Amino acid sequence: MKIDKSLMTGSTGMLILSLLSREEMYGYQMITELARRSDRTFELKEGTLYPLLHTLEAEGLVSVREKEADTGRMRKYYRITKKGLKALEEKKEEWAFFAEKVNAVLCGTN
Image (cartoon, rainbow, N blue to C red):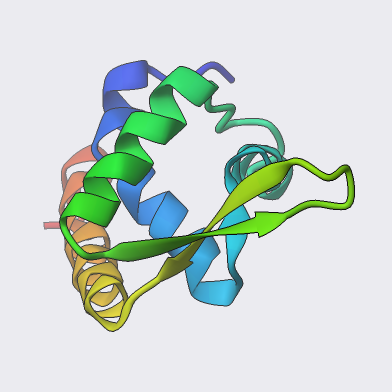
């Protein structure tokens, strides 16, 4: 099923922080892992990911370091910060509340 991009826009940062809460990753690794874990529902383009990572870094939610890859090229690795972990927990709570209220309307549970 194709997902409306407007639904994904607000959750992409949370998804990236969630990936980084498990391990340090480089950009392409995040793109492939997000696609894999979501059964290809979330397929980010580099032009979407890197501006988001720069924003998360500017907000102090992720940090970045450069490391030489096996190929000899320098690669940027991103990791979540303590501030990022706190923000992720807040986003998860916000998402759960939002999903609960949307489902209440859709399913008529209230």
